[in-house]
Length: 537
Image (tube, rainbow, N blue to C red; front, side, top):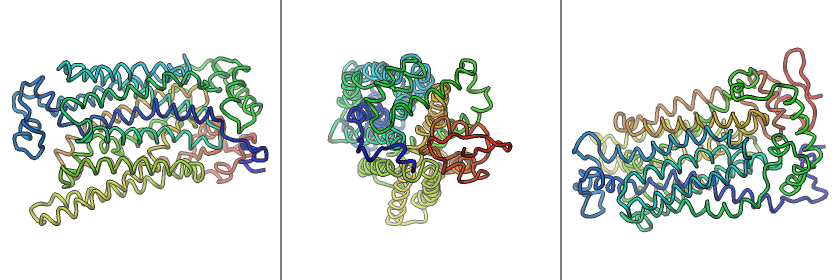
């Protein structure tokens, strides 16, 4: 009998539960999508926001008309000379506040998830983004700059909690055969939110002096809708059984959301995991650092977040306009290129959903990352050629600028198939229930810290070394790729306990037999031989 038959009873023609579809949709729409939206919503209106900061804080008249090619515009927005603080610095602090709050939110994820549950944690998290959106919406109306930063802080807390909690919830409620695809819906929603943020802030939509705060306030709308619908969706059955110890409610919620798998097998797996946990002292947060068997999973969880962020993706999202300018693309076309990049990210992430189940997580992390690394290398070459104004004609600069845009696109393709959807999914799949919350807190805090490093460093790197600013990203990607090639196992169609047991040994993947790591039946018991390698019983 194949793994698929163990998971899906095709003879009984069982189908995906409608309540599962609703739960995945409202989680992605009301939580995951908002993270992408709030990252992108202040990108295209950057000059508008800088002008507002100029007028309100620096008392510098911004411009007579919105024309980025106007020398008056450039001198007032980008080169304010009244003191050491300028509009660029003040604008950058909107991202800084957002990311610092994200670190706080991310570090709270595990505590919230274990205290009130996955679903209820998302419900409470909506309060932050609703408050933040309302505060941001009043910024220009009241001419109060502090509201911009306070609103971004609340939204940052929401985003930090969302990344860990939404992906944890989706992974735990998903049938095993669809766990990869459903878990990756989180990243799909993030990319969709980015595109919506770009579209709402184009010059002919809400990108005006008075309306850009409205775009920031729109983030509250999906959260309000989710606040009304999500209470009717079930809590994670894993949380109910392992944290609340309510078998009856576990059965009820599992059968509501999962009509593809046998509830008795599910309860049996959870009981086995619970028995293992009970045989050990109650898990404490500090054990995530001290337990030897958690060392390799924690390294993988943190390093995969570092690789995702320091591959440069948030620099592309947050500074894509300036990247395109660096590549020689005229500013009038940059917003359309930015939206094209966002749409490409959505399409490729959508295509990656079935591929995660067909080829597995490890494959989709490793091989698309080679395309990503190659794109960073060629970006470095062609951006520098495009900027070689002393040796190239204007036509030649435009050609190399266009080639640079092509490699930004291939970079996005490589990211969307691998580093985009895989990290959040992997963190959920390599830990048992007890340490999972703590692992999410630490790995997501690391992710936000890496995000902060990129957002702080890229503008300065771009100013100092121009087209060579992609090289540090390339070096990090190569180092992380080698580590994951050696140590990260495949997790597709395996129980959480099985993967955690595999990683506890800390040996390289390539040193294990293929049958032990990839072809083990889902429900077979595993044993350990004298060489500490797993064998199928």
